[in-house]
Amino acid sequence: MKILITGACGFVGSSIIKVWKEEGLNHEILGFDNLIRPGSELNRRFLKQWGVPLFHGDIRIPSDFETLPAVDWIIDAAANPSVLAGIDGQTSSRQTIEHNLMGTLNMLEFCKVQKAGFILLSTSRVYSIKSLESLTVKAKNEAFYPKKSSSWPQGLSLKGVNEDFSTRPPLSLYGTSKLVSEALALEYGEIFNFPVFINRCGVLSGAGQFGRAEQGIFSYWIHAWREKRPLRYIGFNGKGYQVRDCLHPRDLASLLEKQIRSPKNSALKILNVSGGLENSMSLAQLSSWCGERLGENTVKADPRNRPFDIPWMVLDSSRAQKAWNWKPQVKIQNILSEIAKFAQANPDWSQICR
Image 1 (cartoon, helix red, strand yellow):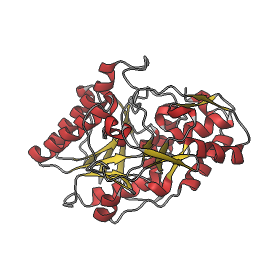
Image 2 (spheres, rainbow, N blue to C red):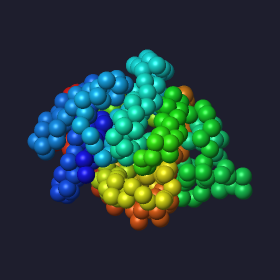
Image 3 (cartoon, rainbow, N blue to C red):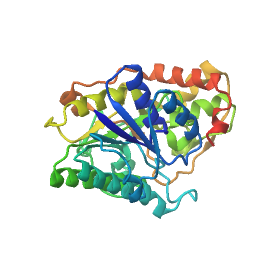
Image 4 (cartoon, helix red, strand yellow):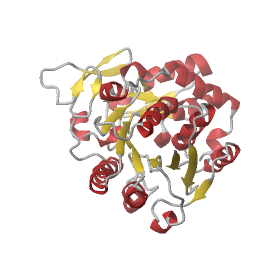
């Protein structure tokens, strides 16, 4: 099986490659990356050590695909993952759409010609901001939880948000670009007869993540805590009760392996892939963990809400578990310990990745 991974020098792409190489899976893996993110060059060296050819190209440029060899699958791990992309002054709105939507179009055109399968790593941010903002939450043990109500929206249960939850805008430019990419991928797969799977991922976390907030809040918080950098609880009265779940790339890699081995599986094509309720934690709870593991630090309260912030996001991946006999194996405590160990062994990591 010949597999092209876009964003191969990013955290997710390189982690998938690392897992498959360590497990000795018999895949021929090719990498594709534009190397514009700080830290990418470090992962480029790892790819070379693992014997993975890297094509230096940009998914936004159609001609960059013209010289690529034929492949059986593309796994799209390339995106601008920030929910504030396009409004934060760091990237333009056009750049965000070019990265996250036009890049998808170029990959799908390549798949059309090659008859290659396509796996899109999408996001929990395709779910409606307004619906999530309107949830009535209660605080318990320094964390928010949805307050059970007879008027809960469709797609919400005690297990979390499932695939039936509203995807009605506003979502953010990031979320909208990924949602449109999902629809485009399904259309291309149906019309041009190649397999497509869409995995809506929760927060992916683990050692070697670039330590930036948009790359993953768990890694960012632990690295910043160890370095005694200023931290803030933003919004929601500045208490840090907002909750997210996290997933280790090793668990994502195990699902991807199942999907590429069974391209004709009739399971639902859009699935939540996450750590779920058992692997969820609030910022305040994460701070307590950091304090016990890494020593004291001060977190300031900033009660002003930012655009697109939500109090609680836990994905319910029951359908993925049923369809693929898949369940996350790496527990959140192990994920946090792995990140902390890496942070302590690489004290300059955040500087390298800025």
